[in-house]
Image (cartoon, rainbow, N blue to C red; front, side):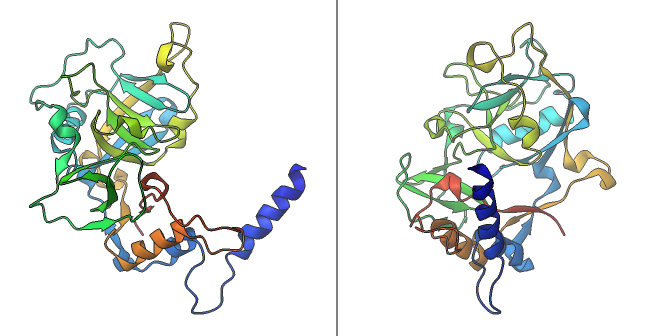
Amino acid sequence: MIRPLRIALTAALASVTVQAAGEPPATPAALVASSPADAWADISAEDLIVMTIDGGAQVIVQLAPAMAPRHVANIRTLARAHWWDGTSINRVQDNYVAQWGDATEKKPLPAGLLQTSAADYALPLANRRLRVTPLPYPDAYAPKTGFVAGWPVAMDGNAAWLPHCYGYVGVGRNLSPDAGTGAELYTVIGQAPRQLDRNIAVVGRVIDGMAHLSSLPRGSGELGFYTGSERPVPILSMRLASDLPAAQQPHFQQMDTTSPSFAAYLRLRANRKDDFYERPAGGVDLCNAPVPVRPAP
């Protein structure tokens, strides 16, 4: 039963790549691949964190300073202090999160960290000159959703916040009023836990190397923490890309969410036109329309 399905799927996928000259791309992936250079924006090296874990595998996190300014400032301070070197990924909970930091919770934090609070979980959009590209479909967790400066946002009135989508990075915290410093981080490795929105600071997203986190062994302890018989994954280093030698700096671009290419991409995400789809969905939620990111050409 499996073999015919694979053949059919392969044939369907192959068919969508064949298009007549002048026709718009039939799939989101094809549209992204054919989008012009002016549809892309460079991601600053100051907004990229390169995490190297046991064995030399690298995970690259893009920070969102416009949406989480104080937490992002703290993360940059921690990275420049090399604070994460020698810490570990110590929690991997199936269909939820992979979390890292100091398992002992005793490592001294560097000087200069900013005080954070629940006010950092959502920020006002007014007077920030940020253009919103709306997503015109219902959302279960917010009155409105859309995209701002390359990021998906949920909105209520003037307040906007980053959602807990797959691969997005949040700040671990204890019970309120603690809002976390940025020293304890996690990334979503399962279905988007949007109920966490506005309860924890979301500070960025993994844009490369996600498989190194999502494929880790699950912890057997409560909430997926590794127990004494399980080995946490050592973190060798976490560095701002801007602090690395030029030859080692990664370079990425994200699609401009105000561009015609992104508007067309959203339409295709909501209404697939290729031969494999019998019934277009007629809509797409915030986490199922990820902003395209690519290595810089």
